[in-house]
Length: 72
Image 1 (cartoon, helix red, strand yellow):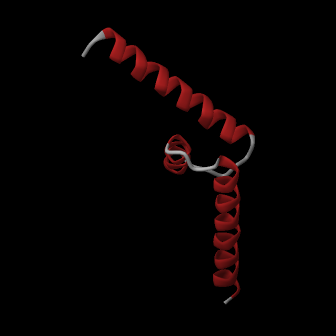
Image 2 (spheres, rainbow, N blue to C red):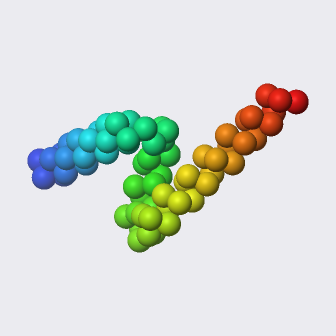
């Protein structure tokens, strides 16, 4: 593998690590896999604001389902 390719891979990993840390600081509740999927969707042209809204709604639904299953 060329040095250029290795440098690109290293930079991509560092960028993702920074995004993950930012995600943690903002208490998004996203795990590594979910954040990775969101990044790929944004890179594919999905509107980030719309994606954020969808993620928040899904998190609310999961919380509601979990709450209902505990109360039953």
